[in-house]
Amino acid sequence: MFKKVLIANRGEIALRVQRACKELGIATVAVHSTADTDAMHVRLADESVCIGPPAAAASYLNIPSIVAACEITGADAVHPGYGFLSENARFAEILEAHGITFIGPTAEQIRIMGDKIEAKRTAKALGLPVVPGSDGAVRTAEEVMTEADRIGYPVLIKASAGGGGRGMVIARSREEAVSAARRARAEAKAAFGNDEVYLERFLGAPRHIEIQIMGDGRGKAIVLGERDCSLQRRHQKVWEEARSPALNEEQRRSIYATCAEAMQKLAYRGAGTIEFLYEDGEFYFIEMNTRLQVEHPVTEMITGIDLVHAQIRVASGRPIGLAQDDIRFSGHAIECRLNAEHPRTFVPSPGTITHYHPPGGLGVRVDSAVYQGYRIPPHYDSLIGKLIVHGNTRVECLMRLRRALDEFVVDGIHSTLPLFRELIHHPDIANGAYDIHWLEAFLARGKV
Ligand code: ADP
Image (tube, rainbow, N blue to C red; front, side, top):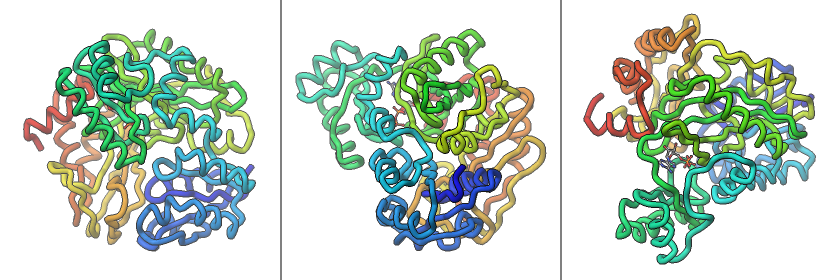
């Protein structure tokens, strides 16, 4: 087992990983920018190293600084959390070359899944159902029109290097397709330095359902159930639940088996999420994330399995320690992403938290790294915490969530709490009757 793990991240996820390390008796090293000197992940770590100025490119994404921090502290493994360097194959390779374990999949697996065109091709070869679309990248205007005509409208133009919902443009007709492709290309070039795009059929009313898997890197892989992340704004998840209100046991059994088999063939190592759109009883693969997800706690709440413990165990060369038949699902869990943003305009709201009181009680979990008096720096993602609630049934979970949201106090900044307090009263939410477009339509109606 590792002696010391460096956590190459900040905020709630850095703290989340630290908790797992401490429970396993592993020493922790925090890294931080000069803007995060007062951060909780720094205060609670066994050791900390300042790795650069506030801009993420100069600190949390600065590979030489992070490798130097490992050398200085003698860390024998790195947990990347999510975002930042978590899906950077080069980072994984550099660490391995320095004799430091990257807690995640192999560099090769990250590389395959990091390129969406390659990922779709691989998924298809592994037997996963994919969204109908172009066979690889589309380059010329003629190619865009021919492929779009073949796929049918509306068509979605997506960046091969895409992430965070960026580089995605809808075209509703042949006339729109060429200019939409140009726009997607420009957006992708600016955001990812890669302007390769491909086409996909735009699904009208799907749900986003993703499967959590864990592999040992030697051909064993298990499925830890699904999460429904259909409540989204600008293709970004806002509320996630497990299990999905839309699936029955037969559908679950079938997609779990398909995913487990695919990951066994790939000899996948560590935690991963296979993302699908689900419409009219059919699953369509969209991408795979080769890391821990923001929404992993809902899976932990219904399985009782600590996913970070499992990641660390597998990375250290041990078996997963669980068989598929050991996985038992109990009750229902919902996560609300608390962002430091205005609940109507979604404009980021950095600043000082003047009052902070997280909710508690049975079945309530708050994963956050903020505290009263904490100043949220303006340099990073606006996620400041996650409220995760468990209940024996979905109804109990919703009632508990409503109570927990009422109890939550975050003053001094704008947060998305009022949005969730509004959502929890909506009959469509109570009935689980929503698709990936529902939240945008709700917001457009001017509620909250
Ligand atoms: P990213 O990596 O940027 O998150 P994804 O491919 O995972 O991009 O897609 C993010 C979200 O965009 C999905 O959850 C879904 O809401 C929407 N989306 C992606 N592909 C399609 C599609 N073919 N049709 C309709 N919506 C889509």
